[in-house]
Image 1 (cartoon, rainbow, N blue to C red):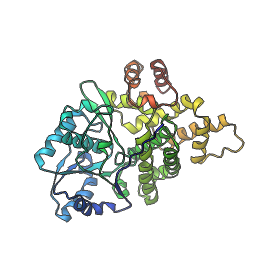
Image 2 (image 1 turned 120 degrees about the horizontal axis):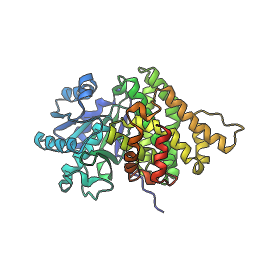
Image 3 (image 1 turned 135 degrees about the vertical axis):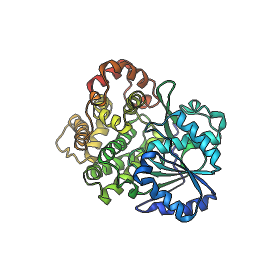
Image 4 (image 1 turned 120 degrees about the vertical axis):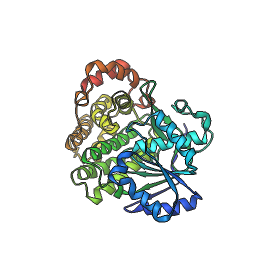
Length: 384
């Protein structure tokens, strides 16, 4: 078996790293940027921290901000039109997964116009050309989209999240500046942090995991367990913010290459059908699905427990494995994650529609334990 591992070419880390942007653009030989961000980040001034760097450097740009929290095919198509009209030759993506995923979709379609319908990009589309260069600035510590070969777009016609996997979409440069995350609200810090933990745990136990990916995911689990509570409870804690910014990037490097599992497979329909924030959906589902997977993950769960600070001395392998599930549940409760689907407006009548999408989701086959649609319904009922 051959294992493939793809990373972006250049990344910058640390407080104030956004000031590297002018030299990055010069090195890439770019002349004008389309800034891809959302209206919320413009309103609170977070995006302006990056835009002001462009202003100070006198680098021309235009802004595209028509992006929903769960971005759609329409958002991408409008962005393609905005890119072409602007005369830009690169993009500066500022935001969480929504902005970066939209930028990826725009960049791929501009470079590969035969995929202009966007829906044909679902799965592993055979694109031929690299995306328009994207310089990605994450403003949340969760998705890791700045370093992944994945992006997720909603097909409005089917009310379905399309997971697109394409090495050509990876941003040319990632600039991970934790100062862009200091103003992130507690709820969003918690949800995106638990999203990063889900990436790390699913990337560690997925069928495609191997020694290289395990190395990354275990480090990410260790750092998230240490830094997420403080990032939520002390939003201005620089060490915690920087730790989470780095941890989510580390987790994403691995899961991007080895895949995820049933947590994501079941979370995606919650976003497409009910607009549930992706991190919240993942965090709510994670402990329950960990228990479902436990029979095939006893040894790895024991390792997860230790990385999360559990003293497993004297425990049986099964007890240590259960303690990992309990530690994840405890962390989710500590940072305020909702625990029931009904808290999110989802009822028992909605479960069949959720399960029908989850069983066909591109992430589901990566789960370590094979699953049926009936079992997925049962798992949704457990968190109802």
